Length: 519
Image (cartoon, rainbow, N blue to C red; front, side):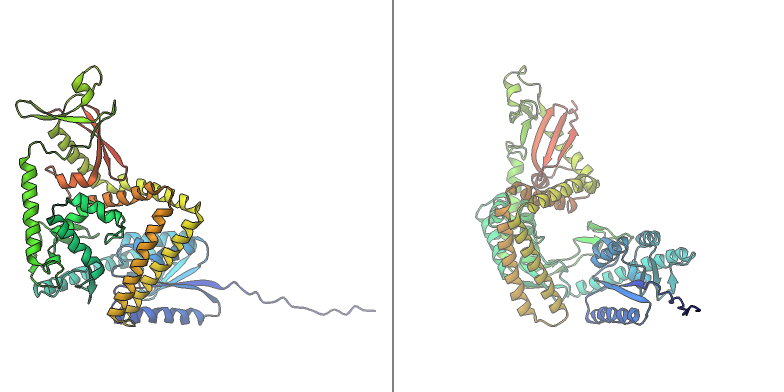
């Protein structure tokens, strides 16, 4: 009997779906751009969903004021991370200017994606990086996008300066005690304004900036940047700021026209404007002027007092550990010497070090670290942050506090977005943000209490303060600055008469040669 055979044809191959992601970005928070932002997300979702052989991975979207720096774009970094994990095959982007406005970063990202087997399609330029000749096109288009960024920056500068000349521009970065209104105006933030008034009153009562900073730190009050530790410089900047009497001195710093942009102190290179009564005052003019006069008197007193020295209490011998003492010769030459050596040269080799040479060593040290701050300070900050995270992982209560802080911070972010979108009025937003800020302060205080090694958290805060002081300090120090010295130097260790070690606040130590004074 013949076998009954039924033919079964092979099934058509079902190729894997192409995993497609989209990246979009808007460069301002204006209402039309926010509409564009939402529209892009909707359009890409529909576009990818319309292809039966495409699988939507995600729509990555950033919004912000600038696209010139990739490290500030969180969703772009998330997109790159997912590509490295093999989750994405293809990326869609409206244009190269939305992908990157810096040719170097643009090509670096595209080369990495190409090595990962991920292609990118730019709709506006009709460029597909899957083709062999696309990189040249991207380079040209990227250069144009970079020029576009420079043009946008220049247009913004022109617009802002016109507003300054008309008295309509105050700032985009509100000082402690104020909050932004209408993008570039100021409104008093009462919870912080009371602290500002207390700072001015305390200074007039004879309390030093160091004592004021210590009191603010002990009270758990956070700086504008969110730091838990205040330093004298932070207090000094408040006392110096004319905005607290309702006036605005514009363009104390300016942004260069060359790319990449850099912020520099304005020494007359760019026009400035002084706007009187530009916003509500926290301090009356009489109080502000009395503080300025008192500061001048204290400065003159320090200069006239020959026995006063910012080095007092900071100098220590690196050989025997004894404090160094100040000595003045009959000719008026001032030097510092180990107490043991002063009593008996045989007890310690660290002899006299001219005070002027210590000042000169500080200036050399500052200029070096100002030019190489990222190399010197960043590794120390990274190590401290890693250590703090390791300690926190071992403390369940600390994890709960950190999660609570993250949730409250997210609430603050969401409220700000609702206000930007016009869904929450300014007064309601201010009330909610004030309540959230109070909660954050309480949580951070509880975290400091729980942290067994709170000296680490203190070191991190102090080192961040040191980094900020250097970042916003003078580009080149040619004369000794006593205030800057106080803000940066915790201790000076004399290793010998020709070598001293500066210990900065936060624990970083730098050694500098002492040059012998010329006779």
